[in-house]
Length: 437
Image (cartoon, rainbow, N blue to C red):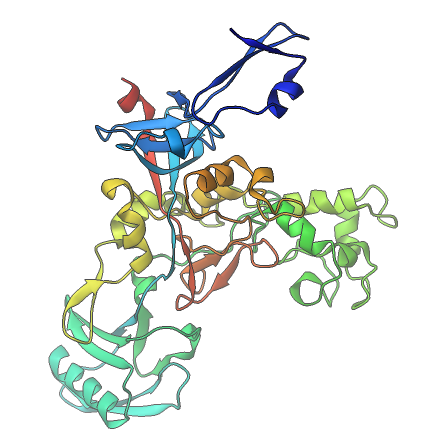
């Protein structure tokens, strides 16, 4: 017999079994409602849970219906749907790791002379004192021998040099500190493996059409930038175009305690009355700073929209370890590629933006899982690693270094050196037409 409830609120508030679905009749509408347990759907939406059944077939469970006590023991939870476009869904792994993007930092060395005469070059390794390399070489092998001797003579213990795939490599073997720009040379050219395998990306394109550090999570940035901030958020000279960095509300309004008013140009662009700006007008400006997915970057950028393609290019690249063995260079890429029996990939800026720009977990007042967004509610339900809207994550793109950070205290995109440790979050794509028939 179906139990009756005065209305939906009464049904939602009533105690229900965690072992089976609860059916109820709403007196005010006459509708029959269902509180399902582990409800399977063939039309998953964002927040639904992806699983393997006992035959390793993909099955989806609706958000907020997962109950571990009745979940089939032969099944396996994989992750949560974060994007759906037509018949393609993108699943975020329930597991992610804090990793460096690379354990070592290799440079390809070029520009040396192979004429048998003596030559000199200078090297400044990882911010150390500049030292002179003297070499006499007719072959790559002879130059490499002199380079190795330079490292030994100068007591450089955390660097190595070797020949791989026809290239001389100079490598920092324990890359853990943010000194990418502090290794320099004169008389030689040093090119990081990042630059070899990734084209240099311009500043991201924003919705307003300008280029700069695009806002990645507008709600998070508004929470922080409503305050009076110093630094890049508070211009010290008159603004005459869209600034490279987002501007905080007091600076925008011309009321900052730290600087004089330099943002009249912005108010003339965004405010009906520049002398009396409103917070809503500043928020419209912030929304204009959000990353523009269709164009992505100022110069092309198509390659930065597909993490799957970049993962395929990067996951097999190797370096030489100090014991002489060859290992995979891009640690985080390899980790992501192993998700879902090798179907995983390292998501691009565009893919992470689409997946995470609407997260609410971590915003003011959303600090408990029951109030969180569907993605995090489902991650929590299946014992996965939840992701705050400002969690720092690696992305497959680079400015001067390989990394793009989401969040911190601000919620906008910023570059960070590759030696630092951030989350690597694996994605995988599923074609529903293939699993549903």
